[in-house]
Image (cartoon, rainbow over all chains, first blue to last red; front, side, top):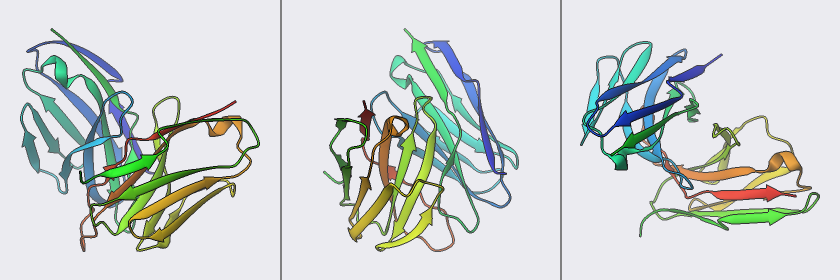
Length: 110
Length: 115
């Protein structure tokens, strides 16, 4: 069965303290891996799509990478406004639906 | 504003009632979705429509019936509401792009509370 596991479940960082979030997946035939950010009371906001192992995408303080088994979301010198839940999702070949992980709640303290 | 919009934002109702949630997107996308986010914040697909045609129907009770009058709208009607239906429901849309999985854009959500 397709599975997406995110770790850690929650992460507390000091402002400026870089770290990484992990998304491990077991999917037969990955068509794409997606990262979203979700703020409380809002819908998920699209961040990145990764299609193949070795691919990397960057946006401001965030960088997403992909291997054949997992993806990392690296956060460099985070700020309090980066506090949110980060969701990882996969789409497999032949399907259109996103299969989500349970998310990582990130809190960045000033 | 170009976006995915949902109404209402909050819905509080009694068990046994019937209710509807509306969704509209003005992004010109061909595909629309309904997701359910439970109390543990886990997001799961319910339905998907492509150009008004149902393409995904996960294991969802028959009490849930989606309707797509045109490709910009996807509504969700729920009959005989139960306590377990309490959740946040998100609508999403995505463009069609041959051969590649495309990003989905989500609405703000509808928080349904069944008393």
